[in-house]
Every structure is written in structure tokens, then in C-alpha cells.
Image 1 (cartoon, rainbow, N blue to C red):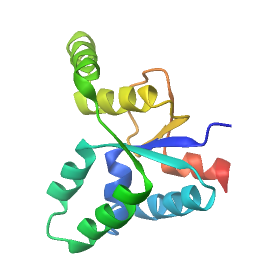
Image 2 (image 1 turned 30 degrees about the horizontal axis):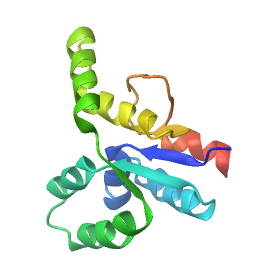
Image 3 (image 1 turned 120 degrees about the vertical axis):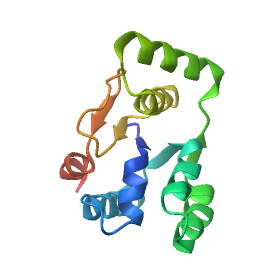
Image 4 (image 1 turned 60 degrees about the vertical axis):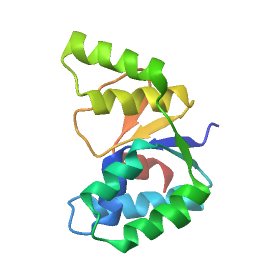
Length: 138
């Protein structure tokens, strides 16, 4: 079984900010993924996005330095993926960031993309919320 998952930006934000609606699911998700030895993949742009949104928090920087950079796989999009994502966004009026994340997950052979977005573009990879993924792995 491929135990490689891709996390959307909102999973990290929910994990780091306890005031967000899905915080408890994201915390449990990261715990279970670690406990069950899943390989976690994110895109490199998430690091700047997460920091930009929560830049006053040194805990974010420590999390990025000590967990993300040391234990997770950080992937780049690359020019080809960006071009495909832009074309899909233009053609179907889709959210560019979501398409980039989905294509990045697919390009990295992830089993599942986990997001707390309810409307996420399907690019041919399984998409689940943290809550639904947890229901299957607990």
C-alpha cells in the first residue's frame, strides 16, 4: 500500500492555529500520519504561505524548521506543472492554487490529497478531508 499523502495548505494552517474550525481534525490527522508512518508531501510554496498568514508566531518557524524541513518531503511545482495548472484554470475557471496542489500531489505519486476545502478540483487523485481520512485510518 502506498502510504504517501499530500497535505493542502489549510491542513497546516488548521494545525497551527487552534482557533480555526478544523484544528482538532488537523491535529489528530498529523498525529495519525506520524504514528502510522505515512510519508507526508507538501509544496514548497506552502512554507511562505503559512508564514505569511501566521508570521507573528515563532512556533510556526520552529514547526517548519524542526518538523517540515526534517521529516516531510517538500516538492516544487516546476514550469511544466505551473503551465498545465494555468491552462486548466483558464479553460475551466478553476482556482489556480488548488490545481497546483492537486497536480503536485499527483506528480509525487501520493495516494491521497488531504484538504479541508469542500470544493477541490479533481485532477485524478483521491481527495479527502482530514475528518474523512481519519475515519478510515484510526
